[in-house]
Image (cartoon, one colour):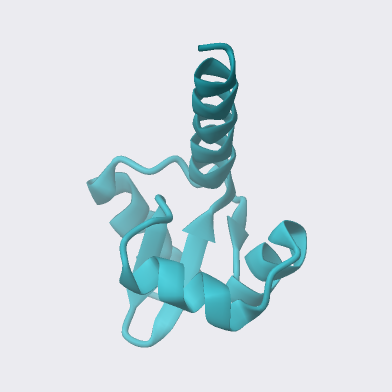
Length: 83
């Protein structure tokens, strides 16, 4: 093992998460969602965000997992509004 990225790749493969070389930090995800990092950390603790990979204290998030999750949330919201 040479680096954190090697460890993350192995963990992602074992967890069935596709990284495709595209991972986000908590701060990057917070910026994209336009929320504070504290909000993302709280959602991670509540297991509300998919694609979380941890190596020690290092947290990375699979962008593809989050995008799929957000797309599902959008479909669910539209379905509820049509009822």
